[in-house]
Amino acid sequence: MPQTKVVALPVLGRHAVNAYLLLGREPIIIDAGTPGSAQLIHDQVAAHGVDPADVRLIVVTHGHIDHFGSAAELSRLTGAPIAGHIADLGVYRAGRVSEPYLPIGLFGRLFARTSRVRAATEGFEPDMLIRGETHLSDFGAEARIMPTPGHTAGSVSVLTDNGHLVAGDLVATPFLGFGTGRPANPPFHDDRLANLASLRQMLALGPTTLHIGHGAPLDPQRVSRWATAEQRRLDRLVTKGRLRTREKPAT
Image 1 (cartoon, helix red, strand yellow):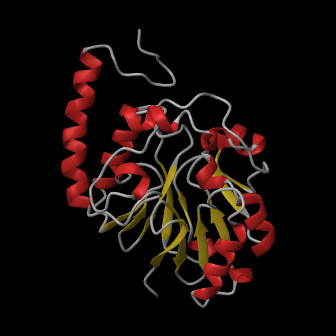
Image 2 (cartoon, helix red, strand yellow):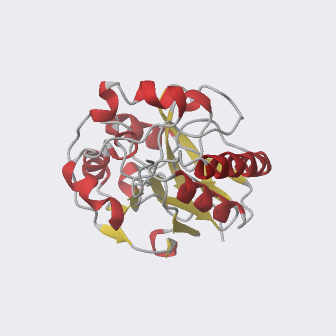
Image 3 (cartoon, one colour):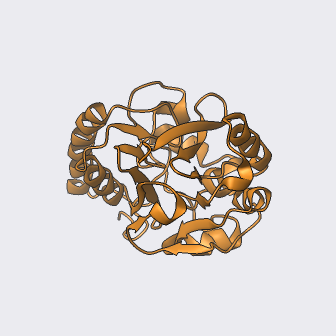
């Protein structure tokens, strides 16, 4: 049985926004980039020796515009169906995020003011609604879609049987990928505690590499040390009543 390989498909800059190509028995695309990037992703798939018409599935990790922005167009270009979690279905249908983002730190607050986070795109109806852990063997890859809520309610990651974790925005590198090798939060999480719990659950499965939406691949041991420190930070914020979540705003 062939080993599943994960290939980065840069959408913006070298690492600022990434989609991924999963190469097993048959190819799968993970994430669909920003609006207007479908042709770029299509051409990069072809540049790796894969006929885009052979792509079996497009997995969208969550309902933010830089991850599903070209999903509808990419589906038309490749003929592949789209998989997305049911908890982010309203965003996928609308083609935009309706609720305000919950920023993290100064960078998040500044980024939340930009027009980019309020952008809209063509909505879509996922062909495959994810509700729980879902194996991808029927789509040609020895890998599982794993619900990892917190960044958004419908966030998912993809874990291959040989240990590659395509983690969406569970974790990032500083400044949306411009800081190399060092784990950090992305600019937003709907629920930081839930996201961290999801990240630690994925780390407990022993991945060999984390492939992220914003940044170069991360070493799991380094991410684990960061997650431990992040848990202490969040615990202090909870004690002080200063941790905002989508479900329970801070008073």
